[in-house]
Image (cartoon, rainbow, N blue to C red; front, side):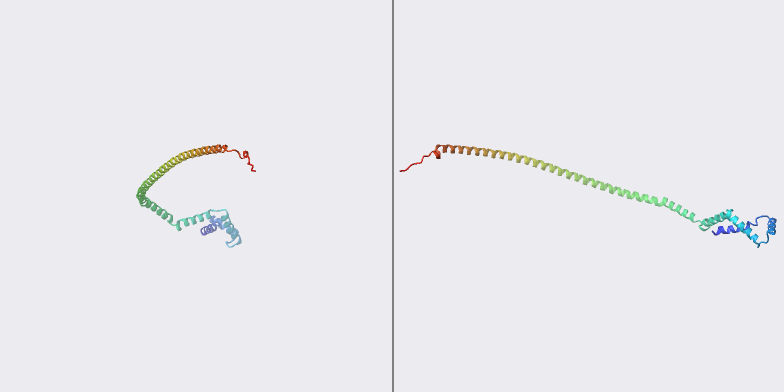
Length: 202
């Protein structure tokens, strides 16, 4: 990040000269001028030490970048969003919900009236259907009883006719027996064919 890098550079440059004025002068006198190789090595060592072991500059840079990102750039957008949500909730509680409640009550009353009318119609239709089924069942029962009575009368008539036929058959058999008996008696008066003697003519 740009914020962290710039902060680290600034702090690192300040770190080598962080001692007292006299101490720094003694080091420069003993190690050479600012452009000498020893001075550059010490500066690089200070930067490496600050980057590896001293994390305060990096953390400060990250913190400032975070604050800049979420406060300066974003501004009051979250507050505006929350304010809009608050206004929307207030509008819903004050106007939308009462309107919906009144509409639902009116519509529910109409629905209940229609439902009662439909229920009454269904009850009437069901009652008519039950009456029709009862009449149909009564008609079937009456027809069945009538058929049973007709069948019983038919069977009685058949039994009586069978008795008459049996009686006529018995009488016919008796007449035939009497007739055959008379015929046998008539035949008995004549001699048998074997008993007839042939007549001899001269």
